[in-house]
Length: 428
Image (cartoon, helix red, strand yellow):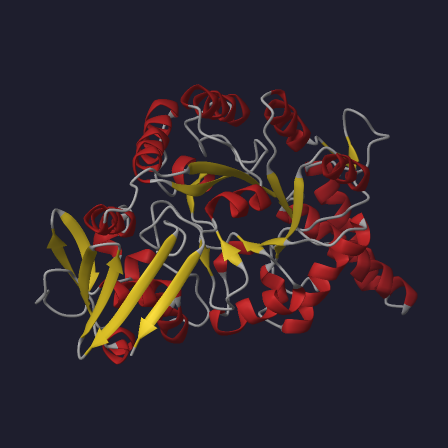
């Protein structure tokens, strides 16, 4: 609620009621039972046409708004899944929120309350463009490991094993030549954004980390652009920084929740690019929620983009303060892998664009700032996407944002727009 209105509010506690008073208007809300919200199953109820998660029947003029916001902002749903499925990714299908997952029900609810308090219903809106960069394929990682083990066998006088390793490597090389260079497709994406005056966030895998997850993506700052071999990855990313683009670490699964591994990945990107990263994303959302935000606070990370899935997993398009009370997170409501890939929604250009238009309608109607996420590479085999060219499709999204007049913000710009001043006068 604090991101949605400048407030000077008197709060009066009267037994089981919390009164919000603004000027001459007053709203009496149920005082939340936080034990219930932590431990009781949720139900989906309808209130004024809005489907809301609640822990009990609505027995007041208004639902338990404060309890709902407490539940969402403290990541209780994520912590519950972490306890039940400690080695698996968060899955909304297991959640009791799945019945309202595609609805920004919090924004709808607060719009009603703001209107009844006589607050302005005008809402700022905006978008943050984000990208995940991972280049080398699984087969390339396997070759790197193979080279290392073969060399070790030769040094340690194991000729038979070394010969077998060398034959396997040569066979793999014949099947698919080693890619000493990559197409830096992300530079083309940045170029299209720059034409329209936009700046995006690029999340990159840090390079000096343990390779203990089979098939994990791998990132090497010494790679060179296939089209322009003089252009290294390090030089390209530094150039983007100089142009006002934002760079941050995309933490790997191989960090394995370990604090020292996470810190090492974070520090490596700072060292390589000679700056202090202040935005982060965790690969695949394999997060120890109980510790994750503590690490971010220790690192001084200002913005996190791990609230990442299709729809409104927190019920809102507005940025939230995480549980460390200093790092702001933006809801990523549109992700190319989920919208376009075969195993997920697998939408064609028209339907994928219509889905985004629907989200932008909600954004302009109720306000907020959502993140859109794309992997800037044609990285899937034939049949992975119905969209023929991701960059061309992405350009149509950029044109749509410009046509609608929706601002494209950097995280710092969005923070200035959406941080509100709230003064509480509490009478206990």
